[in-house]
Length: 192
Picture 1 (cartoon, rainbow, N blue to C red):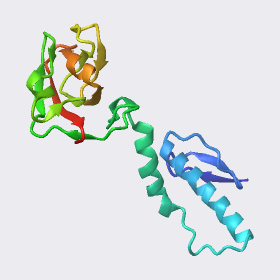
Picture 2: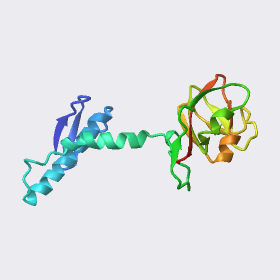
Picture 3: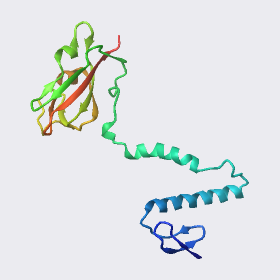
Picture 4: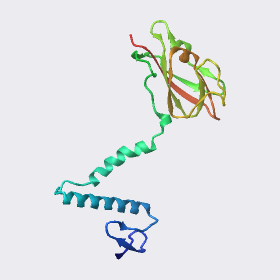
């Protein structure tokens, strides 16, 4: 074994062949880069022993792609996932044109505007996509009024889908914190 100087902290450490420098440095990035380099060397040795030329083998070329794919998966918030249809609903839906609305949710519960969810000439809303903006809310879809502590909690910047005619008619929301929330709502009917 030979002694090498850590390029991150300046400490003299022993370098073990094939394992790399076994040194717990304060700079974790350097340690991670060293592990990547060791793995690249191992792969290169395996490929060269198998007779594969190294001219086209460049693992660093794929590192950016791997990070671009894996980082969003690691930091994704499942609560913010958007659902486009109701579970079990197989009939195609179409938007109710011109009937989207923005609702301010305050200290008293509020539902969807009746004229938007029941339209004689355009059909009845059977699904609503609701984007909760600026503050958290609580909602119920059984027609009863939620309170600031009772009902389904929904964080700001979340999309919820209200499925079914009864749920759309019974939707009521109230703010759950100290500030008003805004709901951006789009309504959908069965496709005609």
